[in-house]
Length: 430
Length: 178
Image (cartoon, rainbow over all chains, first blue to last red; front, side, top):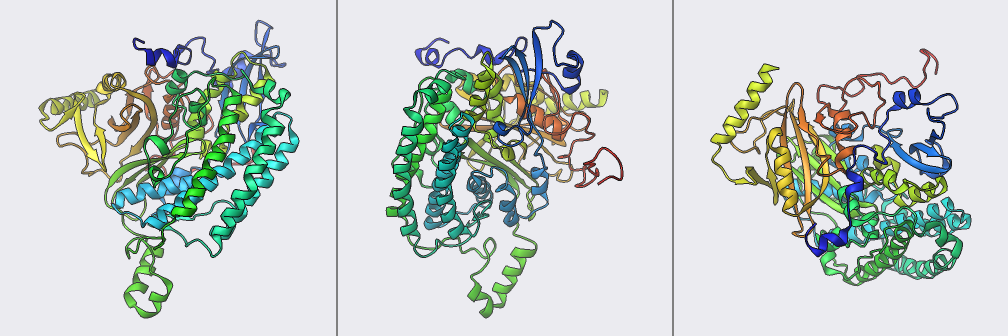
């Protein structure tokens, strides 16, 4: 704490506490032993309250154990695992080609980012570069996915705070984006579109018109959101000054994405450690000032605008060429080749039965998902399946900020905080 | 117990003999353009403290790998004893725009490494996850409990000797009821 820069970050002491921490470090049994049948703790002023896992504003199956005094939250603990299906174990039994179908089901609101992280890691282990068009298609799809994911946030955040009509609007606009995804990938969600070696298929005819139409539809709707939410006194009252965190705390808690940026700390992997072709497009990193729920809301709203800006540039810069690498050992040969060439048939057969072999080694690649740093760590033993595949889910890590953000707030503010952290439980539990 | 102590000593001796490149006082290798450090569990806290002072401001990830069925890995520095469990810690420096990875040989029977909670409290959930799924013990962790699986779960499913579908999952509390 000597130079000015660190002073600006604030004091992180709060999150280092072992004793008197806002994290309720009790397990089920200990919590049950501490309370009587009404939920009250010994001293009669406090109680332990269970919230979830099937509470409408806990975004899926998040469960919270809350220590309350009246309506004030003292300590809390996110209890997770209700959606744990052992996807990292599953990945060990799937080939690299099948792997994308597995990871895409983690963050179901932004599935393309998991596919991207997985594919980039595999390509790093294989030491291959995908053609430029594949890179730009990936960028286009990911930015559209960021838009759809943030639109979903606008919908659920509005609903959690009582702006129920916002839910309809957010889903409506998201559906427009998903319709384009369906046209390109065949599916609204869980696309399995970005695969090691490139993408599954080239963009369909007329994609430019579709994207241009999206670029026309969405901005005026964002203005409507502004009218409905941003400038609305009741909405602001619910969010401003609620769930505050300073940059030092966010860094110590490994929080990334909008949570870190809301504290005024400008860190975005697209800008700071560019991957794909993000160094060739122009966009702003949106940051907040106070690190409260309102900043987290406003960042996501404005990131939609920045993503649209990127998409506009992609429309102009999209190169022609192949949409996947023509490497017989990694990608299946074009369909027409199979009729002519015995070797092509063999390669096709090998790729879809045994899968391709990846050289021994380990690699970690991270991308900036709508929720923060999404990383993929793969260890290969030289075989056709990953020896170990680990996804660093931003929601899982960001969830740790909840007790710190909710401490001392009302239970209604707790709902606003959960919503502003925007956890996707599929990615938390994996 | 004495056996494990001996093997730790052996590893440390080997590291003293180690003459290859070092960084922050521990053996260093490179994997796909990323720097990888190889501290022993005993060196981990010290190394991470040095890294933190050097601008590595965030612990991005803590995970583990069970090398039971892939023991002969070649990417470790020469002289380092490969162990069954390896804890992998990823740190990031925002000032330098750089990542660094630490691969800690955590042991075979009772894999144990010190907890990084006092340096990076954000590792709390990640270390709980590694304990839950791999059974690696983190000494000094404030809440050393399972996180994804129920408290009464037996075994650590991401271990390689834990077969898929080994434990039939009982969705209903009563046997035979569906």
